[in-house]
Length: 407
Image (cartoon, rainbow, N blue to C red; front, side, top):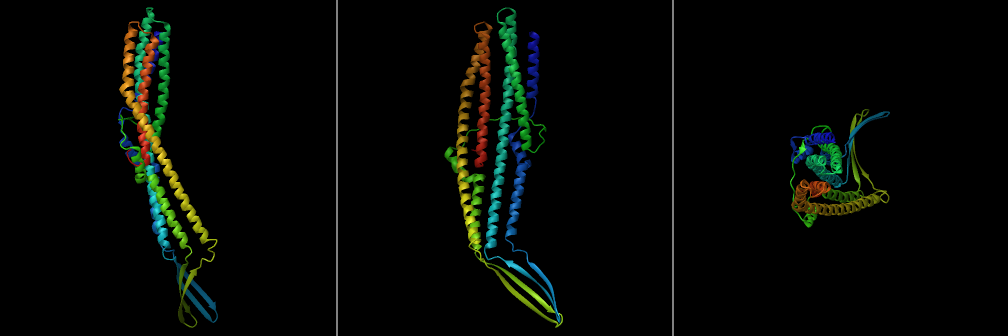
């Protein structure tokens, strides 16, 4: 039985050391965010989409390409050579509206790019805090493992002299085995989170990543009403949809201008080779919106319906974001209360209970189960503390991803 305890102790120690030593250096969240902003593929793709949308503006504001005409007519005894060009000229104001619509689309893409940045950073922070919780959990279980080894050796010694039951030793062995299983699960979770962070940084999943640097509790700077007000002022998600609404309004104005005719100016030169005479011809073609009842009118209806739909999408998005802010605030406030309660009251009380149980067990005043329960209660309270701390920081990261600044 003593050999079995030594084997379990060695296995637990080896696994904990391997987990704790996964990254001796500490990873700064600020440095990781900076790297993600520089290298994340989604962010870089969003930047290129902005550049592409900006390049559309001068294209749609420019006149259509002119047409060059070359011709030859042979009607004996006359032979004519014709040359010239024609230029399509949209009704004044149409090109300007097209440019404004493209400009609003470019501004929308820019806001979506900023929203992508915030989403990637928020995801990175959430993953970082989850990884931090995993490392904290490993530390807590490592401490529990050392105490369990001490308890197991004490129980074995007491059993050898007939002062403890064999079930105390067996129960200690069982808890060490359960701890090994939890550590194995944490190792798998650590590797998965490691790969997720590397993906966001555009690294290979197996690239090394240092252990996360210690985090501090971040208090909320704004109330719920202030966050709701900031939503309308700073949220790229909302502002991007507002740019879409502005573009939809200009699309309606452009659709109404479709009732107005476009023009085509045609200028030609002619040379009669037989008579050796030159001439020219100028024509103005007018595109008449003859089928306005089924074309231009329906185009206006389409643009107005799209504008109304975009407005309703904006309202729906705002309501959804307000609900997410409310939920995030509730989660952050709950986690803050639990962090304070656990850190100031529950964990100190659990430590005193464990210390009392250890002293009482040494003199035979309490049984081994009471001692073990005291240890496991302290362990779970410490794990809950680190979990709630991570959940609080994750809630703030989600709020920052919505409003665009630290909540």
